[in-house]
Length: 420
Image (cartoon, rainbow, N blue to C red):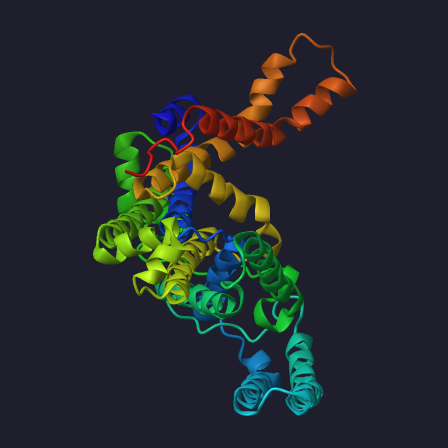
């Protein structure tokens, strides 16, 4: 009803834009619900998984830059492989040598010498790549593959990162885990912003291809069959093309959402799902029954992060560009958490409801806030106060979000659709 009212009272383009963001937010909320609702893992690194999903789109479907690759691509890959080899050598020494001062000094020497050798190989290659046409390129480019292929790769990137994080951080207490995952997410974002050779850093990547079967509006407006159909319906071609594109996005995103919900429901109601909830409710009792709590926590942490990474790749495909500056904890961590809490932690349908409801609320207040504030401030004379109130109206969404969260926690503390 909210989306229909938005379409009738404002515009269908706005309503469909918000709905598409809401569906993607619902997929992210499902991933967080797996970690928290299934296993009780309090992770605040959601933003990092979303960003890695977006990075996958650049690498898989971005335009190739042969000159950038020729300038230093092979040497850069060799440098990265050398860095990984240094880390693996350190791990091997740590496991094989007996604890003591000798082991500590050996590992320190390997890491320090390996670091300087790594920088000596890596830095010249990165500088050579970034020096090639930095205004429009300055990176190694992508593979130019279809955008749909980047979505599972985005899930893979986020899953691999979650494995690395989980191996080191899942043994921490819940509050320390939250701090660690938030810090690691910021590190991921810092790398994306500063390593121009990877995805142009803060100079952004644009013109990313759209996923099949979504066409470009310009191509639709030049298609004779489409123009004839639009003329028969009495619609404006520009408006009709944008609406059709958003409807096609909605169709693809909804299919992915339904697939994730179906698999989540099957998993939740299986013996595996009951085991995860038993671990969440009482780790000591589950461990006493022979369950490997740490391994199961790592498993669900990887799965949930992969789902979030999938949604991040879908979002970047829809926007057609990667803008690292847009990834903020407020939007891609804490807002997703509020969606899970409001919808109902531990309930997949609650996560979907929270994603759609809060996705609508977050964006509609930004668009409708200035209009509403214009009516509210109509009796005031024109001046600095009136202008300030209208300019600050989009920020009312923070107040609105907090108010909704407080009301739900007061009157329905388990969410709008509680876990059974």
